[in-house]
Length: 105
Image (cartoon, rainbow, N blue to C red):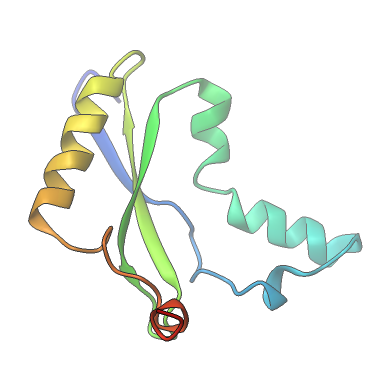
């Protein structure tokens, strides 16, 4: 794939960001299903040893933070950092706080 592209852009999570209550399974099939679901987009990248950068990019409709990941060729961390930095220069997502935390200020 990296013979044709420099960076792959994917969501970090394949599902809306769950709340802490939604992830509070202690064991059993529900816990395993949740872990598999939450790591579906990041686990293969980690297994392959590819560099990846998670970048905040907004909120779900219920106010949970969401992000995308940039995946690069081996040893291309500098390119990922440059792209992530450029995105943050053009947006404010990395400066915003979830609504629950804004009330605490």
